[in-house]
Amino acid sequence: MDDSEDLQINKELFEALMKKDDAKVLDICAGIPKGPLHTVTIHEDTVLHIATYHKKNDLVLSLLKMVPAEDSHKLTWQNKSGSTILHETGTNNKTVGAAREMLRRAPMLLSVINKNGETALFYAVRHGKTKIFKYLHDEVTRRIQGPDLRIFLQRDDKSTILHLAILSRNYWMAYEIAVRHKELMKRKDEDKMTPLQLLSCRQLELCPTNFFVRMIHSLIDPNVEDTSWMLKPLKRLRKKKFACHWATKLITLLVQNDTSWEKTESRLSKNKEKFHQYGKSSSASQQEDIATAFESAMRLPDTPLMLATKHGCTEIVVEILEQYPQAIEHIDQDGRNILHVAILHRNLEVFDYVVSTEYATDRLRGKIDHDANTLLHMVGEEEEDVDADLKGPAYVLQDNMRLFKKVEKLCTTLDRFKLNSRTKTAEQLFYENNNDRRAQAKEWMIENAKNYSVVAVLIATVAFAAEYTVPGGSNQKTGEPVLKEKPLFKFFTIADAMSLSAALTSVIMFLNVITSSYRFKDFEKSLLRKMNAGITMLMISLAMLMVAFAATLILTISGGKKWTDITLYAISFFPVVIFTITYLGIEKIDLSNIYGFFKRKLKRMISHFFNQNPKPTVWYSGQQNTSTHPPSVVI
Image 1 (cartoon, rainbow, N blue to C red):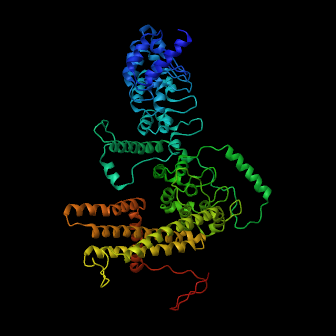
Image 2 (image 1 turned 90 degrees about the vertical axis):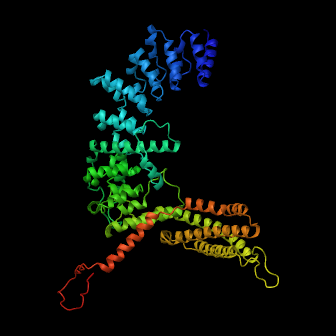
Image 3 (image 1 turned 90 degrees about the horizontal axis):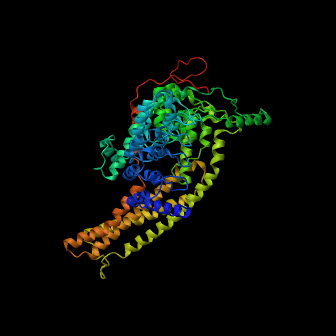
């Protein structure tokens, strides 16, 4: 064939493969010299490569029959990336039958590696395909033993199939590999990362938190294979539960075998604790900065405990600390302990878990890192998280203010006055780094308060007008409403009055927000309480206006017939129902937090009134006073 004929055949073959016209593909292959081994793409993929990639198991089997037995060695053809037709089976689970026939015809395909140093088994693991992985792994372990097995388990760049299984998020596959090839659990890739460190670098999407979804979730068998009878939502839940089940088992197994948490930095800080800005010269500080920069350039990966804390993998942190509680004293290359890292990355779950262990807290709370930062200094710093929820700047500032108070209660009194390497106290650093955010929060709150005020005034205007143009009109002689005796009229009056009252109240709250002073301490409680109270009043006002509208519609249009009244009721109250569902869906109330709040208050009250334990003696200087009056305390 000349070049023009070859191009035309390639075009027809490629179009037939894309349109899944199997008959045409077979017909064209039967009429060309190379048949199914004809290269059809610019990357030298054969017809068999493309058909396998597109999961056409029956077509691949038919194409393989067209290859004479004496040409079976030609099945090892590699495209420009070095991949064979067996590599292409690793991209899906529907060509296991084709893979079986390929290996029967050309067993050497199993050991062929592509230009990335990957066998077909590696390819299947990289794509996270379970069925083809099972088949290829069984074939490899049945045929290959001893040192020759290495090329199937590890790439040239030192990445193992366990590393790739974790990266592909197929936790069942990763668990099976870890159990069958235990030596891989401690292997490091070219970046010195163990499998557990890789697992710690991303947040695991484990069990659902929604109560109703969790109930359905508990009834599903995650290991059932036949899911043809399941609806799509159930299939998704089964898939999530399957991942949750095997991720938990994988975490436990890897933590038991990965002891890298033992490798810690010295607890001796590189900075002397300082409480004033005088002393060491700036040149010495600059030399330390250069040394620190050099060290950061040579930085090694953090341990799984620190990586999990940074990336929000609370399950891994809990598992490590339950199996090795002494790991809680680990220090990273910046001299930070787990509380430093949890605060810096705003992983409050890990922070609360560590704080709940009082002994560990006493050991960790007063430590400083290599930049002389205390735990309080970490509140002033914050690592950006692209996966974090997008909140208004006022809410972010409020969260930071509350975290500062929370950490301040944990720290010692001296920590408030310690200076870091930049001669900043924790409070100075916090205010300095959050000052721009305060300006943004002020602008954001004023703009929102103005917009809400406009809506509230409009609602108040409509409610006020409705109150004096009552449905049905007024009696011209007495001036009383005509429909006064009907029950729904009272319903209308109350709803309209509530709407007007709530709207005016919300306007007052929003005006108060606009005229506030916007100090840092105002963002902790008062400002956002006023804003939330105003929004709540506005929502109540809008809801009551809808109720008043529904009552008016029924009072003026109702014809007395049952079916028309039912229809009218449904139409009238439909906006109220939609509003309630939508608003409650957005403004979710965390009942568990409310319950916990009242429970703590109740315990405090009970302990205050019923605690009969003797109070500790106050320590004071001087002679012991034997009089009945309490001694004066020397401070």
